Amino acid sequence: ASAVAAECGMSEQSLVFTWDGVGFGEDATLWGGEAMLGTPGAWQRVCSLRTFRLPGGDKAGREPWRSAAAMHWACDKEWAACPDTDGLAYSAWSKGLNCPETSAVGRVFDAAAAVIIGKTHASFEAEGPMQLEALCDSPAAPVSLPLDRDDDGIWRGDWRPLLRMLQDECRSRALRAEIFHSSMAQLVLEQAHAVRDEHGVNQVGLSGGVFQNRVLTEQVIGLLEGEGFTVHLPTVLPVNDAALSYGQAAELAARESNR
Image (cartoon, rainbow, N blue to C red; front, side, top):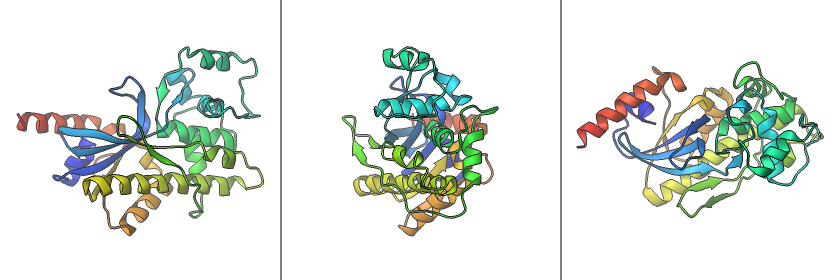
């Protein structure tokens, strides 16, 4: 958040979506689907995703089926193609063993790729989402994802309505991929609206590796600008983890200047 704010000169209060894989959050869960409100040195988390328990933790980055399975298990739903044929992962998930809570959008994209195109294992992180993105040709009518506020005041998007669509083989793989991307883009817009209604913020930044996805990012920018938001996307710095050190420097400089 601080990296994109610093590059783009976002000096006034802004809303920055930080969508990525997993990172350790202040509440001891694995973040990755957050939106931060404020300025460098003074951020507060205002939006996130519904969490789910991630069996195997970091292992899920190379085994996307784990994310897909966990999301289905959390909803008491069946996923026939689940590779957990011996039930060991489910047993660990049921007991909460090595299953940290996560809100990471990157893991949701992994799950979508595992279900839609059968990408249950990956040779590198985000391989499945990249292949899913390549299927998309145009935006599709999104699945409505509920947006509720939790006890901590965080606006959380609920991914559960996506599961039925992801498994709906009456739709082509390409159509399901398009619906998924459009649904996630629509969620950004709805969260931005919720924060603007309360705080009056009109500047929005996009950061994190998920926004390397051109299909998602172009839809997000189009939706936000269509509703009067000013959108900032890094053009000099990478949007992914490669800009973290720059963001750390900007964050530290802002904190020092605010003393």
